[in-house]
Length: 160
Image 1 (cartoon, rainbow, N blue to C red):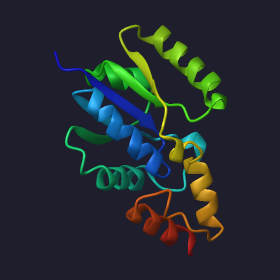
Image 2: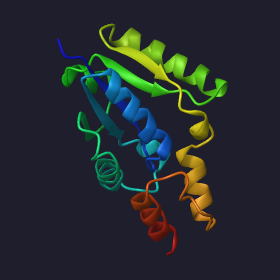
Image 3: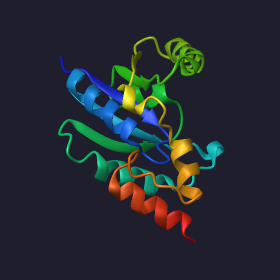
């Protein structure tokens, strides 16, 4: 039986760290859905449509990965799309407490959806979309942290 997973997140914007985790998840699972969350409470810089399109373009080279957007509970999306696992990234110990709480809540809401934690390669441990946005907004070079398409989108977003 094929096993599918989702990698949910705001992806505002998608970073090289996200890309690396998606590639690794795609080696473990038969199919991976990168699920771009609406996350209106986070007030993202990019619209849901922009974030979804950037992720599609950045991840186009990974054959068993698709990109979708969603609103609502992650476990509901997983169940509605026959996905058995939720992939979450842990960059540092500081991520663990929040991710553990989230995983426990998701398990309580839906015991048939499991959470799998992946740790990024060391070169991506410090990269977060928040830091990338801040550096880009202040005119810094983010080319080492994001795909060239994302860098171009950030430059356009912050040049106005």
